[in-house]
Length: 306
Image 1 (cartoon, one colour):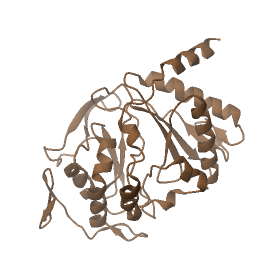
Image 2 (tube, rainbow, N blue to C red; image 1 turned 90 degrees about the vertical axis):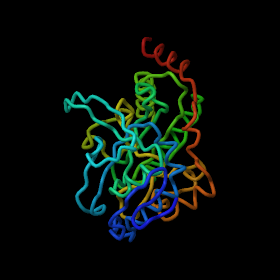
Image 3 (spheres, rainbow, N blue to C red; image 1 turned 180 degrees about the horizontal axis):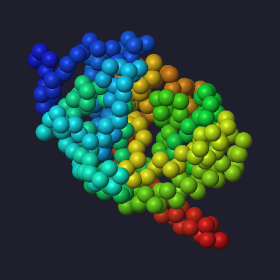
Image 4 (cartoon, rainbow, N blue to C red; image 1 turned 30 degrees about the vertical axis):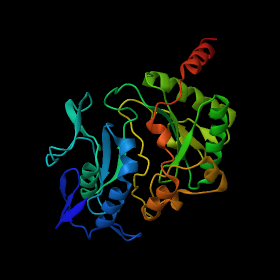
């Protein structure tokens, strides 16, 4: 990759602008530094984004100014940015989702201050077949210790079921736990599992876990969001930045790190590049076909009908 004035040359030439604009004031991180982060992390980001329709959150004037969600590719989108058309019943129009399939696209998104990258759970080759199962653990009150405790207890249950699991910070206040999935299962299948496990956890640990959708009814419990894992829904991508003061990123973890007491603030744009250069991609198993859940689905169906 070379630079020619304000144009970066990668798979395609990308013009970058306003490089001195500060996106994270408290951390003092400029757009130029964010673009540099994206370039350095592209080989880790792309496997988790490739061919997945993308929703982005844009912060044109930094994380404390006006922001907005964007699904549809804007008019100024270069022709070389891959898109995927999806009819929206809600808005009665076709949404042309952007696909972050190469470094040039990531740079172009970063230049437009797309700070948060939220991909689908499925790829365009099989949009109704998720490649993973995900549990989003969301605290109802400030603090990370309860979320950590719930994550470790959820791991015990997943281990008992023979399901491999991989945690990552949300980059904000929560933890997300992913299970790589074999090909050919539907969102109905995964919803059956997430619903069953989420409700089981809430019944087993009623003092600290809830599946109550209404925030006002959760008290101080950790919410296991199993409803988020559905068609057209998204979660923050591994290694995506977040619009928080310390410029945290959604960081894949080892279970040992989680047990020892890491917190989301430990992982930022500043230190993530050196981390992956040392540890590699801890979420690499999520880019390959995973576990067959057929027998588990059969057991849940039998349990539900008994």
